[in-house]
Image (cartoon, rainbow, N blue to C red):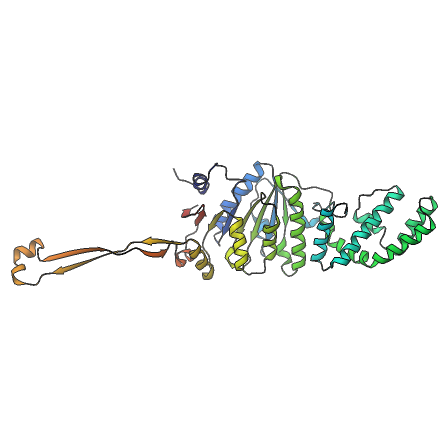
Length: 384
């Protein structure tokens, strides 16, 4: 009976269950191995009722052509999904920090970020005094988008006796101090609008985040990743992250930021064309994040050399032999020649020598459907 790669890993692992106890990394250009491992990841997540988040850093739209089984795939950019519906309600230090972090990615400094927090609290308090909803939305903020609109709101409070003339002048002065930052914040809301929909991610839903489409817009990629990480921190137990990557440069910092900032018990997997083209520090993060690493054929010889070193060396004992022939007449009778008595064979076992377990030339030319499984200190060449 053929043993598949999950059975092999299960034989090494204590406890037995593959998912969610093990994070998988597949690195290499072998599409067959990526497909097999990816389908197992997706099937396991679906069977457990998990929400699948597809972090798609591909340029050729391969993610949407992939097989996601029974999952209903929803593009996070189409405005249906809510990843930050509570972002505007800055009622705790955690929510303030979350908003400030997103603003920083778009170029807001700390002082302007706090002015926006003050502005949001101002709107929330005004809504409370008016007896209206204090759960802030983009539509509510549009009602405070200019000095004239704010003046109208406050004068309504004067008419109802909820606000004195002195308080009115004070509040208008406070608003004027933050109005500039509030105007800039409206631009920020345009970027957030697609992620403030009414539908929450649910089980058996795959949320597609096409980060590869923003390859030339790094702040946008970083903002999307921070939104994802912020959401995952609140829904760790029912979320699975699948990173698809076909990049070959070191400008993929947003992937590393995801791996660094998600909770340690988050289930995350990565399928990459070449995970060894990251910078040295970033490669260390990747190796520490994924205990199960599968290396298939790599086109980049530098990456092959890195895998060669990562797989380590083994002791190889090489044998040699020699044959000596006695040319003396007395040893070269017909009888001696027939029986081989004129020859002496010597076998020599040389001292063990270190050699790479898998040479870079082998890694560069591996057959389709084969890969090196690196798990728990064992490196095994496997057929998928």
